[in-house]
Length: 329
Ligand SMILES: C[S@@+](CC[C@H](N)C(=O)[O-])C[C@H]1O[C@@H](n2cnc3c(N)ncnc32)[C@H](O)[C@@H]1O
Image 1 (cartoon, helix red, strand yellow):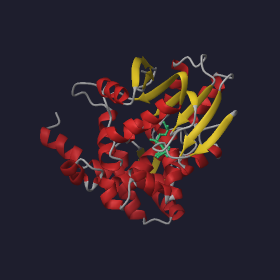
Image 2 (cartoon, rainbow, N blue to C red):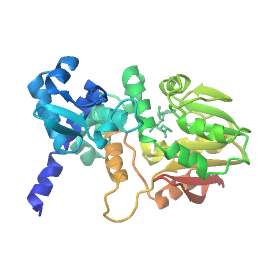
Image 3 (cartoon, rainbow, N blue to C red):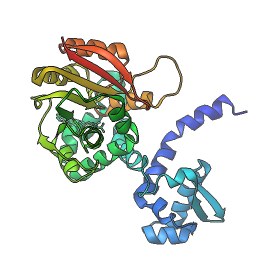
Image 4 (cartoon, rainbow, N blue to C red):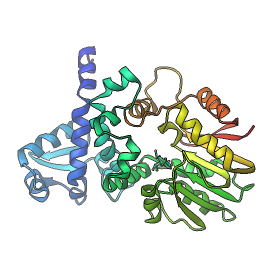
């Protein structure tokens, strides 16, 4: 039986595993192993790495089930490692992104706990999305990471909601545009608006989230104003912001929406109880990185209420994400 000391030590070493994963993703090791096993010497030569150091990192990840050491210093991918290949849909870009700037911000998590403010701003000198606007490469990785994180959930949202009564859907903070693409392909009567910061719009225009027919691409700032539409999808956006900022976005939807319109906040609700749930990890990431938070149904209801919107119903999807449907009060 694993002793409490061992369990807690394992938790305490979490950073070693997450950073090792980032390194092998950045080096492209899973792709180099796509054809089958390889020696560390070959992998090190192909990635211009130190073979002994790379071996130690791969041995750690083999112990976590990512690789299998089939012969001394020869590795192959396990099933888990295979999802890190670049030709497979999976969390690869998300793991890369979250272990980059977000990881550095996490070094100052105590600052967030003392102040309630995002450590990211202290470490990088500007808020997360402002910083991304000035770093196009990282912004592009961020958008790919959002696609990776959304595996299955965009389809689940598009399937779960009846868009037939509407004509113009605005994907607010839609980034890469994958959700909008899934909605438009199922609803040929709809036109779409992809609204995001310039970096998000650029990703969508380059096809990061798929083909976007009948779509107007609008770069802007949702704290200033949002385009007119009769249904707004706001997926994984409200969780980026504290209550004041979140209310400002929702109020702008309320102002711009056509009569009879709806706002669909698509988020993962924080469950009660102590069960492990990834949303609790993402919540603390939000605390340190953007200053946002994950919320319960009651918290979303009061946020919507303060923005002049009424939570009509919570529509479950087949994924962990729910649709909170709101209309004007
Ligand atoms: C967490 S991502 C969610 C992206 C997408 N909706 C999804 O579910 O994958 C948040 C999005 O909000 C966008 N964003 C951040 N600040 C914004 C602002 N002030 N105005 C418009 N979009 C913004 C980001 O560029 C990013 O694409």
